[in-house]
Length: 128
Image (cartoon, rainbow, N blue to C red; front, side):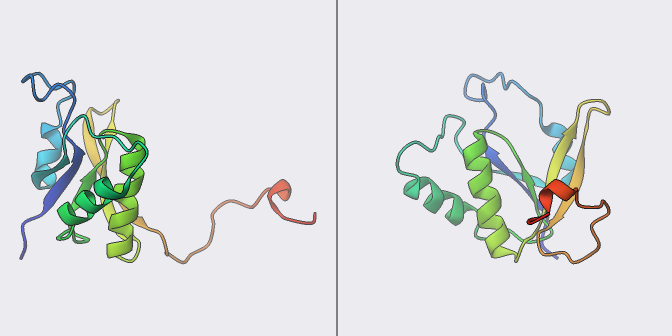
């Protein structure tokens, strides 16, 4: 069985100086860290090269691995899109709980069928 990996989207700010701004070591209980991009990476005008690099670095991602959503929100969105495309919409991520001060795994299934637990408000239904 393959060892689980926690794909950290971007290095934590301050890592280069040896003083990362946040401590992600709690996420290590879910797998070995693999950092995808340097801390200063950004999507500016030409996202192609960054998308190519993310795709290359995520090529071995499986539904048993985790994404740790760090860094630029636009890059986080692209990474989730790439992983979703590779796994037919099923993947796991780690969410930090400030109150409990620990990471919790969240399983995403974009194509899950089931009943929506809340009634749809009238204003959301067309032609009403």
